Every structure is written in C-alpha cells, then in structure tokens.
Amino acid sequence: MKKIAMRLVRAALQLIPKNLKNKLKQNERLTGLYIRSVRKSGLFFDAPTPKQTQALYNYWLEVNESAFSKPAGNIDGWQAIVFGSDSQGITEEKLKALGVKTCLIAGDIDKSTLEENIARLDDQIPTLLLNGGDSLQEVAIGHLCDALQESDLVYCDTDELDINGAKSSPRFLPDWNHELQFSTAYINTGVMIKTALLKSLHITNQTTIAEIVTELSLTIESLAINHLPLPLVHQLPEEKGELNTLERVKIVIEKHTNAKVELDEQFSVNRVCWPNSNPLVSLIIPTKNGKALVKACVESILEKTTYQNYEILLIDNGSDEQESIEYFSYLDTLEKVRVLQYPAPFNYSAINNFGVEHAKGSILGLVNNDIEVISPNWLTYIVGHAEREDVGCVGAKLLYSDTRIQHAGVVLGYGGGAGHAHKNFPRFHTGYLKRIVATNNYSAVTAACLLVKRTHFDAVNGLNEKDLSVAFNDVDFCLKVKGLGVNNVYCAEAELFHHESVSRGLDISPEKAERFNRELAYLQTTWSDFIANDPAYNPNLTLKRENFSIRSAAELK
Image (cartoon, rainbow, N blue to C red; front, side, top):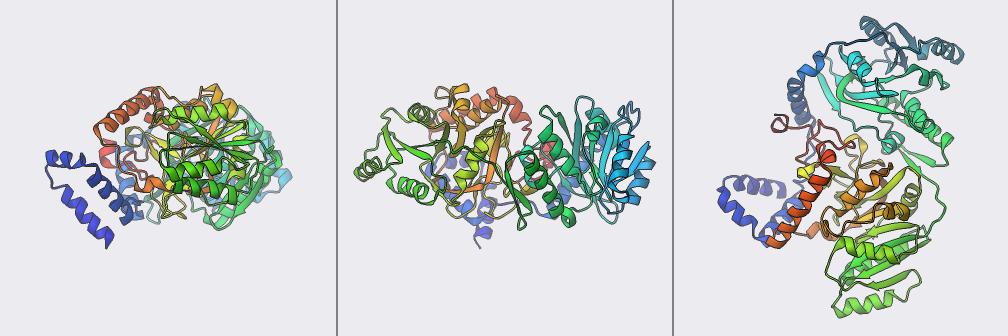
C-alpha cells in the first residue's frame, strides 16, 4: 500500500506547474518528509525487472547497430583454445567459420598433449580463450585484435542468445577490476591474449579462463589489461560450473599470496582475507553533541571489534549539550579513547585533518559518529586490504537503520557528480555482477567509514579543507589517492550501520545550496575525466539512478 500511495503522489507531482513545484522544493521540511516517505515505501529500490532490462537492451542494440558491422581490419591471423566440456564441437565449428587458424580443444586431451600443442602455437598472432558453448559476434575478432594492439590481453562484455537466436541478458562489465576477479571470477570467457603470455603458464584440461587471467594478474606486475565495453561474446549461463571456477581462482590466489580465501557457497563469491602486521589503527570520529549516536558508535567498536590494536580519537567540534559533554569526559578516561577539542566552525575536511595530526597510527580511519559495528571482523578485513602495497582507500558496506544499502561503493557521474552504488537495495541483494556481496574496486568510497595508510594521506595532503568543506571531500580524496598508482576497495565483508543519513533532509537552504553547488562544480572541474567515464562502472549503464540499469532512450540520444 505504501508503494501504491507514493506512486500516486509522484504521479500527482508531475501535474503541478514547474514554478509551483520549484517553490515547494524550497520548503526544507516538506522536501525532507517527501524523501523519507519515498525511501520507506521502497520505491528507491528500483532494480529493473528482466522484462524492463530486455526492453532497454533491445533499444540499446538498435542504437548501437553500427558497432556490430565494424570491418575486420588488418588481421594477420588468430588462434583459439576452447575450455570446458559444454558443446565444444559446436563452438569449434563456429570458430572455423570465422577463419581461426588453429583451434585447440582443452577438454579432449591430456595435460602433456595440451601443453605441447600450446607450445606450438604461433607467437606472432594472438590466441582467443573461449568456453565451450559460447559463440562470437561476427565482428568480434576485428574488435578484439584492434584492442589488443596496446595490451597484453583484452576482454569484452557478454550477453546470451535465447532459443530463437535473440540477444538477451547483457553483462556490462567494468574495466579491469582486481578484486572483482578474485571474488567473482567475472572475466571467464572471450579473452584475446598475446600467445607468449599464455605459454608462460601450465595449463591443463581442467584450467579455466578466469584462472588464467587471475594468475597472470598476480605474477606479471605490469600486465596491461584492456576492456571493450561491447557485448561481442554470446555466453552460456555460468551457474553450473560457477563454484568450480571460484574454487580454482581461490587456489591461484592462495598459491601466489598470503591471503586466506573462503568460498562462500551461499552467494557464490570468494571471501579474501589479507594478512596484516597488526598496525596501530587510529579511528577519527568528529562530532558535535550527539551523545546517543556517539555512544552507539564507540561502544559497538569497543565491544564488537575483534581486531584490537586501535585507538579512537573523538574530535569534539564545540559541543554545548551538558549530557554530551559529560559523556565525552567519561570516554576520555578509557584506555583506547582520546577526546580532542576542535572549537573552530564546522569543516569536515579540516576536522579530520586535525585528527590525523594527533593520531598515532600508521593506518588512519575516518569514521562518522553515526556508524555502528555489525560484523566483528570488519576491521580485520579492512586493515588487511589497507596494508597492501597496491591498495589506497578501503571502504565498508554501510546499511541504513532499516538494513537497506546506504553505501556499497561510489560511482562517478551519478547526477553529474557522484553517488552510492546500489543505494537503497535490500541488505542481502547480490547486486549487479554480485557487486554488493563481493569485495571489488571502485574509484571512490565514502569517508563515513574509510581506512587508508598515513603515508597515502600525507602524500595527497589530506582532505581539501579549502574547496570541499562538506560535500565530495571523500570522493576528491579517494581520486587523489588513486592517482598515486593504487586501487581503492569496497570491502563487502566489513558491514556496519550508518544511522543518521536515513533521516537527513536535503541541503536546500540558500546558503547550503550555494555551498553544495560550489563544491559540485569543483568536483566536476577537477575530475571531469572520471565523471565522464568511471572505469569501475560501464559507459552503457545509466547515470540517472544508482541501480545499474542499462541507459535509457533519453540517455542514448
């Protein structure tokens, strides 16, 4: 009933004249009530249905028809290896029809013969890795060979063919995403690779393509991986061999790293826990008053967190409520807590920079005062990531008080700026490509709960307190850290509540709106390339909503 009522309200709003609607938007209480009501109704959870996705994909195919008529270009030849045991003969015949020079069938021969045959492949031409039963768009080889010119390997988006030969179920993938490969094996077919790299590996008839990609990524530091955001491979559904593929990727990760990997069969993802040296972690929590929020936050950290080498720095930004002042005085007596006074006007960036100046830890944690711990091992997982040489900022899975997703990574370009991936989705929804339940890379994460090495924080001069005092300072910070040559990580295993944001209104007072627009303009100017094309997203997906839907007709014009 709530959904029906809110749909009627939203429909009625479309009939109101624009001038009157703009006046209504200036009423902060009215706008806040509307936003809260829509959230509670569940209308913000609007993942497209299969029928809607198919309609959007059909239109996308019409608009992008020319991309599938690309001439082959200068192709000197190519080879292929077909993996798995499904419909290999059919796949081989289709590849021969496309002009493949040599086609090896991995499942039909023993280890020694396969390795001997791979050794005889021509190093001067590339090799396509494809699963049995999968097929190629006619122009796929031309696209893949062109994209391989400046890379070591290239992969593309995929879809499926129904019984009538119609295209369906597109998978629009992000650019190379280390963590998503480790956790979901998302690259598992349609890979064009330089043959010399392939010969450096030991390949058996049980080897999977995801395994090959994962091993190369872990053993070749400068591996150049390219992504074509175009569905050129028609893929068989993967569910049947999914757990086996993840198990083999798990073995590769544990072979080449010190990480411990658990295969989560419920969600079909790998849980990768990286080792840590037990560094001191400084958790910086700014607040003004808010005793109840701070109490829930600090006590949940103290009582639930299994990782023990941390300190809490509570930064008091001019509290004037007696009960808060008294409670903060009590906290200051605790062994793991220090309370610092910051009496200057509110500036989120400046407050956190101040906290860092007084922190003792080599790992810094920026934590909002309305955070509450859910998973006891949250800090263990995040610290393991944060200590890795190739990792910058690490963020957590944050839930609203009613358990809907508040944060599961930040996507650049949403609304012309940035927004939270999968916002308002149910807690246990897997998300697009399992990106809610699987740890993966995003260009940015929210500073409501963010950990980073002190060396990285110092290298980018901390948060920008001059230009971004309130909004987008975390996005700007993450992108600066990413510019150091490291990757930012959304850690799905670190689950916490983020309470107050669920009831917060919009920044629509004249002063707040002016400040927000100024900070948005700074983000758009400074990070225009990421906003135009976030590598952790896909250019074929919408920027109008946080639901990973395919772009609508209006966006494709």
